[in-house]
Figure 1 (tube, rainbow, N blue to C red):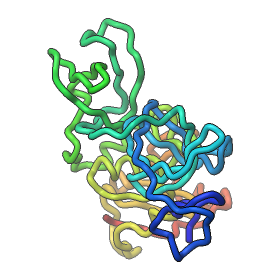
Figure 2 (cartoon, rainbow, N blue to C red):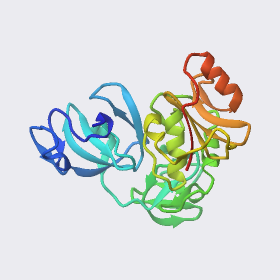
Figure 3 (cartoon, rainbow, N blue to C red):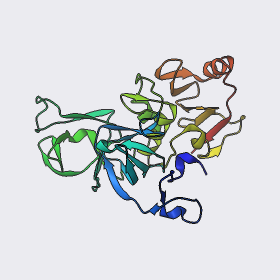
Figure 4 (tube, rainbow, N blue to C red):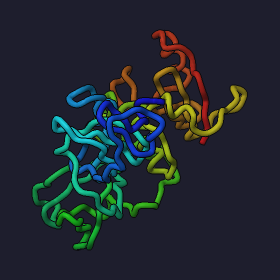
Length: 273
């Protein structure tokens, strides 16, 4: 079993794994929400970051120790540790952030000092409106133009990825503050209503293969060992990459040549959703 997707550690396992793994105890867990703008999902308490979860995203808390919760993310089944201080009680989200970023304000006034910043894909509960602002269940205010009801999707996943142009590269990142190749693809696909795993080696299972003889189309995915990019048009792709240390456009053929020359091999898969 892939440890990134297996809700079990040395202390406890999810009830669904009873009879499949040896564990001192089993639990159904309890649903929580991320209560900070971004929460790192760590390999171990105080360990390296594997991924990130955004404000309002739902996670199943299975265990808590050393100031960290052992969780499984609802969006993709990813398992890891997050700081307990970054979690809050579960709530029913009604809207998600549809812009690259937005602010939480203590009043419905864009001139007042913001209380926090949220990234594209964050989830909130809207309980009312005040002028051009939506009021959340925590009595914070968000510009309504930056919100989309849960369930509404974007038809152009490339347009979502393009919002992140210039965003700095960050290993394991999933937000406007920093993002990596698989985080970019996952964010775009989730906004488009597609389920999507967290890491590029998992994402390669998406869709169906495109023959080498077939032309690429907007939204197709190109995979290398440890990397993924999204096709923009017949000549260009967009990806979060270390070469630019940012989300950037790159000529497809130039990128294939460059990546091969740096020792990372050829394209391993061409996929279409």
